[in-house]
Length: 216
Figure 1 (cartoon, one colour):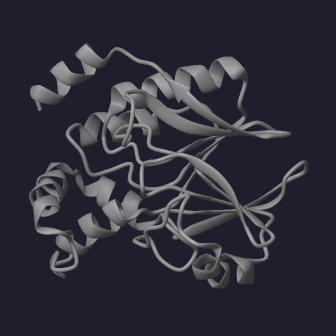
Figure 2: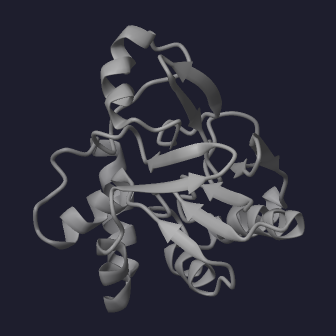
């Protein structure tokens, strides 16, 4: 039951297409999208690519989708950093009527049982919300109260756009990285779950992707 786990795409369909092509070549039979499919420069192209998938897929909501829905509902973006608001507003304006309903239907978390790994909890940032920030260096003492009560063998998160694999108390916590906007060397970063946990990085045509983005 190999599963490709794709977080923080940020409307970069070229990066997503490359990661999906590698996942298909491996033979994954399920996809999990861990939030922040949007916002970004090519939202419609990204949503159409996701809609065309021929592999079963699960989705959870990230802080990006939450912010877009907040803006569309008139609740405002006071909780969003000022430098991010323009991109969120622009992305929201591109969406079609059905896109908003699709995003609103995504849950905050997902649990799956993978025989070799046990119960796996997928969340965007942490199990308690989609905006918490922690890294590979955050002390265990601060994080045990966040993760241990969940009772999962493995928690998969994203949000900080940096891959890591660490153990917090009795819980293994893995950051899948960012497909579309990694904070590090270029590439599409994602996670493969099977009998093992494998952090992946896929190369793609950066010049082509940059040209599409400039044209948006």
